[in-house]
Length: 278
Image (cartoon, rainbow, N blue to C red):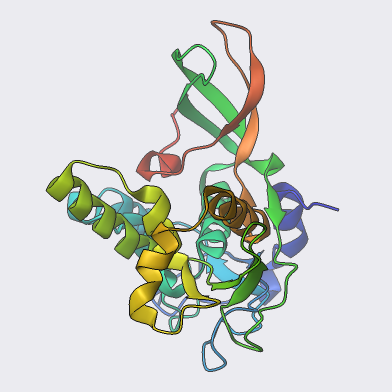
């Protein structure tokens, strides 16, 4: 049974007597709550503070954290949300960039709901008619998708296996974390500037796939992935998306222009933490 973020938040709020003081706060201890990690900590190295960690404590957003959100320098560098997480996590040993994308999203959604409530107004482009419009989303209705597959590489391993339907070969892949996502975005931008072409499909495979049956030399892996049968590549991407833990960011949207009712993905950006004042 799926768990909504509203149910998750209510179930894990700490009573005042159990709330901890954030290390950065000397005179005032903001409320601290726990958020469940969709990965259940299964993919992190044994020495990591995230190994087998099923939940993390986060402190409430204060004026100091709003200074982070307003920093043009951090926004330009593309690290504003990472720095917000770093400020709100009570465990200072955790590097937000080392966290899986799904775990990061779960923490960010919980930080946002605790700070400003579940209502989120965002500008959405209708997939049916292309009209852009503002729409109210209810973040309390989002559901967590937990990791239900054990890593193939054993405890503390971020490696999973999938058998390709066309070639029958077994491929090993990793779930993406903040570091790998940032590298992928930089590499894609560099290729785009150099060639003017988009290579997101193959570059994503190169970022996640760590081995392919029949390819002994890692240097030959990129070329082998480029030459994967389309059926295999599509099936692999679908499987990686399906089993990856995280927050289901899709929610119902009814277009005011064409009347089409469909699911759309809720965007997460800097504006996610600046709700309208009305």
